[in-house]
Length: 119
Image 1 (cartoon, helix red, strand yellow):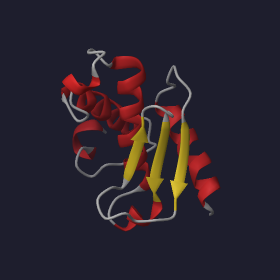
Image 2: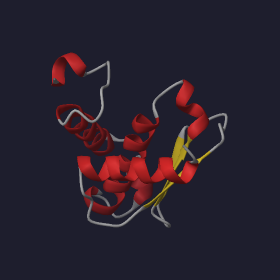
Image 3: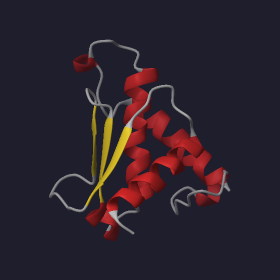
Image 4: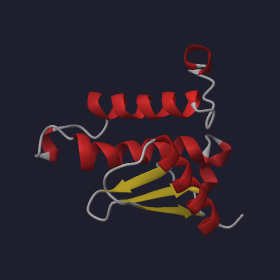
């Protein structure tokens, strides 16, 4: 499956879990940067998932993580000054956990770390 098809599949997967209020773009990039499996660009509302990390973690897991950033930034941010609220703060992890749990309950994604608790 090419990157464009993977991106469409991942975006549909994310929207099944939670239909966010703001549009976003999702790209799958055929690279493996040294330090990131994915990235969310706040200004462009763009999620990038690096497909060569799939050997270490699933693309769905990476996509959920970046989608949590999108939801946090566009719907749930409590402090308008981004510099005063950490990117991976409590609110982000609450959103990420909720997305993972909902995906598991819907049978869309299995995370071995929470499967015994959620399902």
